[in-house]
Amino acid sequence: MAVDRELPTQEAHDLIALTRDLADAELAPRAAEYEREERFPREVFAKLGEVGLLGLPFGEDVGGGGQPYAVYLQVVEELAMRWASVALGISVHTLACGPVDRFGTTEQREQWLPEMVGGRLLGAYCLSESHAGSDPAAMRSRAVRDGAGWVASGEKAWVTHGGHADFYSTFLRTPDDGDRAISCFHLTPDLAGFGAAPPEQKMGLTGSTTAAMRLDDVAVPAGRMVGEPGRGLAIALSALDSGRLGVSAVAVGLAQSALDVAVAYALEREAFGRRIVDHQGVAFLLADMAAAVESARATYLVAARRKDAGLPYSRQASIAKLVSTDAAMKVTTDAVQVLGGAGYTRDHPAERYMREAKVMQIFEGTNQIQRMVIGKHLAKEATPANG
Picture 1 (spheres, one colour):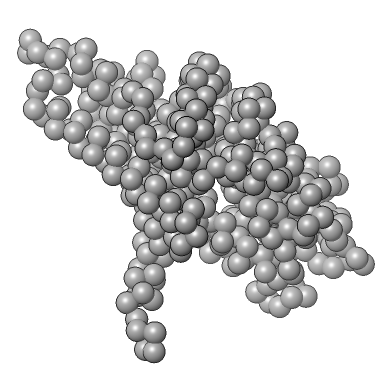
Picture 2 (tube, rainbow, N blue to C red):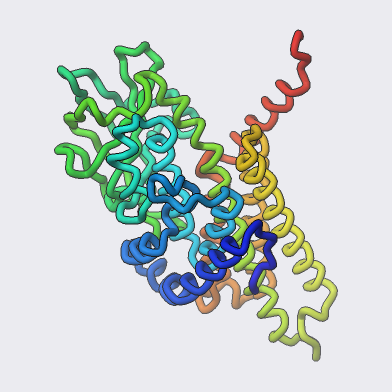
């Protein structure tokens, strides 16, 4: 079902229409097969890059689309309605471009950004480690000075696009800058000693490759550091609010697809001589699903519009991530329930949607972490300035 969207310009309406047409032609026909075969859709990202969908929220001066974040996120949602793995990939790519865009030198931005946001390259984000997921400050992977450059060692975990990306925004401990200091680096797969471990075997989003990235005494040129030494954690955390909105949009798109499947089935399936949608028990369940989807959409758009207006939006981003991903888990589970036994089989996509929804509550900060973030904001905002 096409979502009736409030968009700011005719250009935005045209962009959504283009996205829908492209997603119906290039994503929807491939999704089930690629997920079943755990195949990474590199050619799909290339196609999206050709039409400019890999750089929508970045400035036109560096080859981006110059779109408001609220418009970009609705594009992501439209993609997620057809294929969540690809939509997530767009969100991760945007996250990976962020450090160079916001903190890179003039030379770095001119040299790297046009290809990064112009669609020729695909990015990845290396922050987490196996023992340092929710607490990135506990990371152990490091870069030590070696002449003018650095030597990096360790392993980053849970890297979306690991082994397929063309560049990796990578966060490493830099001991010279203090025991807890972390710095950001722009790494590429041509660097000797930098490579991917075998992909993780996941419950869902199997078309989105996730792998650890190993750093075996990687020689990193001095010009690959992004931002000031020792400021990497601040760079990483500043980008996570935007990433949480990306995940929110993916979750809403996934939930919308599950709702659409459930409604279509309820209109066709009969029980006791009536369509099951005409039974109050099913109709109320569908109504709750619709309310959850639309509420989640409104929540991420509130946060995105605050970002576009230059207002603080960290608390709203965490709320959006919490609400949207919990809604996706509930709606996809309820979609399986509406379909009954059919929903538990692979003849319908409902079971895949349910498996894909679970990880939305985990990555970009677990929903327990989101509650901690929201609580800290509430405490801070309620404390008098002179308190």
